Image (cartoon, rainbow, N blue to C red; front, side, top):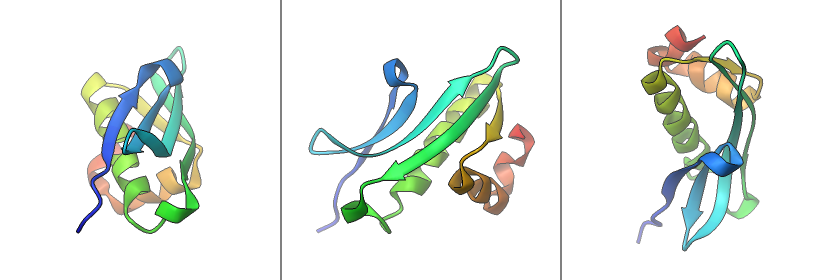
Length: 94
């Protein structure tokens, strides 16, 4: 049976979260600069949930949000940088 994770935007914490049974098992943090650039400093997934694609789903959700808002992205997080490199559809956000 496949585990069902829910990806949710938590604007109060400036992050997207991966939830399993209403518990946060991963997140990607961001903050907005005055020039409408979203800075992404950190992505984290609990060790027992690593390797299940959660970081990728979090990053995808955040980048789709940024794209939908017409913002740009500054990926400080190494994971986010690599994700954008591997997914050309997000290159225009840089």
